[in-house]
Image (cartoon, helix red, strand yellow):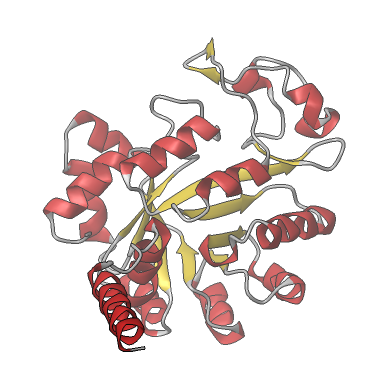
Length: 290
């Protein structure tokens, strides 16, 4: 009896020691990004426009994987609906620019679209037009997703929301809408999916802030410091684009475009760019990103 008790005590001691030495599970990448997104408005988050497409076709799984590899916070992608009601990643209404083929996305089934290689710098690649579901699964636990909703129908919105729920990616998605009034319908579909409305002027900004608290509001370059500060005071992040002139300046002379952007929009704390890796490096040097 004493021997059995002694063995049991040794076993419990060893088990307790092993448990004490076992480190807690590491947080997923998305946990760290979401902590910054929700708890640290002083940090500027980086969004890869149409994913990190410098070396891969835009809106491709390769470009999404590259954004994850670079450590980007948010990957922006565009979704449209195929003839057989599959949501796919595509910016344009047609597939001409990205595949060299004629016709609208909505004119093809998903299977038909898989026959066409995506182009990069005008040359065919091994990448194909991805489904929204595949993109969500690849991004899960890794990176936030900004869904630029170009499908423009209630049916497509319902399909998108169901895919977000079924893939377990609700907490890491931002659903971008051009008309803030659409938020009412989307909230009826699922209140848990974060919505990002676009504000075009002071009137729309006031209406958005009165409607609800949104995690982030997309603003235009015409916005004043006062307007952006109002958004920040309401507890929302301010999204601005470096696309166009700022990115163009940065390509010519490093730091010039990003310096100008931050001097003009000091309250912006989410920046979308075609140069995400460069912006991330710039912000880290400035102490504005982890």
